[in-house]
Image 1 (cartoon, rainbow over the protein chains, first blue to last red):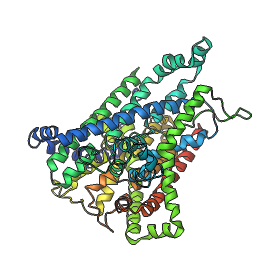
Image 2 (cartoon, chains in turn red, blue; image 1 turned 90 degrees about the vertical axis):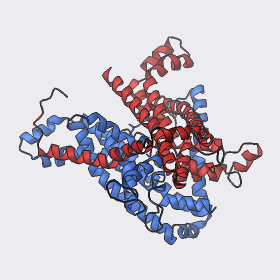
Image 3 (tube, chains in turn orange, brown; image 1 turned 180 degrees about the horizontal axis):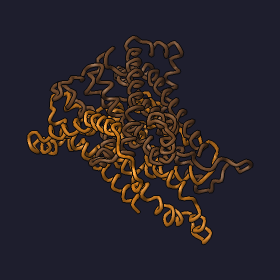
Image 4 (cartoon, chains in turn purple, orange; image 1 turned 45 degrees about the vertical axis):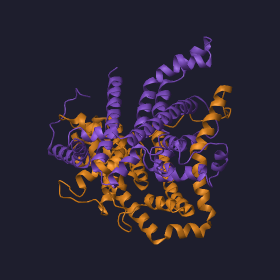
Length: 274
Length: 285
């Protein structure tokens, strides 16, 4: 494609280019860079005071725990579901495949409400029973993990399914005909070939999980030091007129997300070059 | 998409089209157990909770549902949300296609950076997105544009969070598009506009439609980016999800569930649109 001789760019090309760049500068580039400059307005003092506040360290830790657990769950779930969708036939597969995308288009507040209605300790469908068994879900860490897992559910599947489809199952059949067990075939043949898709999926899931706000807000109850996540702390700091603190936590979260994007795009271009 | 972090081109129809007279399943014991376990988890996490929302809304009867969604303040919030989501989706259809076009067909230094910028709204936590927009359009705006706490803030937040959907749907289709057809049309005397309208646009239409559906769904349910930005002024900048949240906080579950059901119906419609579009694309191969 690069070798094609292109017609010299006309005036339309320049108009479009300028229009697009202006739009992106006003909507994304300028505002994002202001957050960076606001964070470092007083040097690294704002960041340091965040990391020295034990409540905020708790919030960051809770966010990390919820994101790691939700990502682990979604990875196992996602790889299994992708294999089932691509390699097996069962009734209801088409509906399932459509429903799996649902979490991406449901409002985070509705996600929170849905979980509270089922797992709420007072009058949820299963909540009182679970609490009787000593497991508190809503206003506690399991609820935060569930909300996080809900919103990032399809991301691994969306990466893995197309790769599995393209791969075909000839190698797997060959391995099996040579006497490999199902488990050996999975670990030796299938997993290595979908490795990169899984990695992309994991990075995207992680980024999405670290940043979940609405659903977590509904299920967490925002108990200081117990169920307050980093995103909830941003809101609280800002509303308490601690803008510098809000910007500092926002900067931390934003740099993790941007790092995730850079990692994914580097991996992608490396993959494309091979 | 929200999230909906990175939208991919519509997922191809999963698996082969069912051949006639094939057994209804080919599950081995292990894959059967796998299917059972994953379905159990999917039901516990997603299906049962969403069913609970609809059931709670239905428990109030049609009257209760109607009263909840026609409450003056709620109806205003729904109107504001849907109007803003529709307008923003239209902007995205135009701007998104243009951005995709520039990313695929134009070449200039710094283009790789723009490529990354498109993904930022996906990756940024929504609350951070709100804060980011406040820094340029808030009270001490360097531009002198104070959109925070006005009705326009809703449009601004929606534009930010839905930026990538149309771009990322259209981009791969545009990359695959054979430029020779366009060159042929041009050499036969078609103007650039005609070539675009008659050759390029029809090929992009399914991708644009899919991106628009995702962008509408994302906007209608948006919450996080608005919390700090919009001020949640009733009848002006209060959106539907904020109404649901205040109903939850007042322990008015029936009302919350009724409004949430309305949003769920929209999400389901979008899923149906996507499924139909994907099927059409897959059939055309």
